[in-house]
Image 1 (cartoon, rainbow, N blue to C red):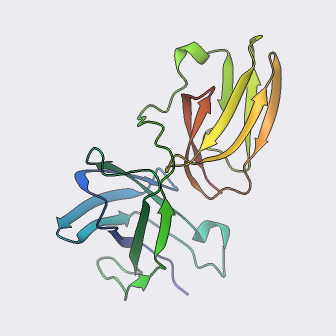
Image 2: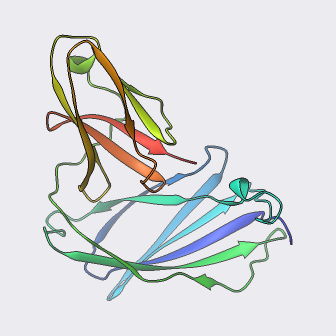
Length: 206
């Protein structure tokens, strides 16, 4: 087994998804160098991502550090998504074990997700000033989200994924502290809503 030095991902998105051009990529480590390209043509919407600066050990030597993830945040044309719409994509993943040379692609399964209610588009990762009495963390998270309410207000906390689907929720009483179990969630970026209003973005890693 050899260590992986670079990865190239060719992600073929559903033709119904119209990308305007801006692509933000979140990875499992801030030390990874990321270069994005995109190809937009009839019935072809590809995002090509090259990740360098890696040193992924073989899973047989270190299973935990041999894993990673890539999450895309795409700038889509307005009204290109609608509730109930299925979005499908397939990726080809190329591994490089020596600089500049990539092995034959590993093709993933085609995965489809249904669009739920679109709650809004948020770019801020910080807690708004009007929720200064509410502490949400840590960030990144792994298995639990710690919620601390330093006011007499009662809050409803919801965890929402990138498709706007509510995956977990809890009611938080005034002057209380609790933890929300997210061990069943996949790694990636999640948005926290408080009483239906954006509060914070959290990255889930393991």
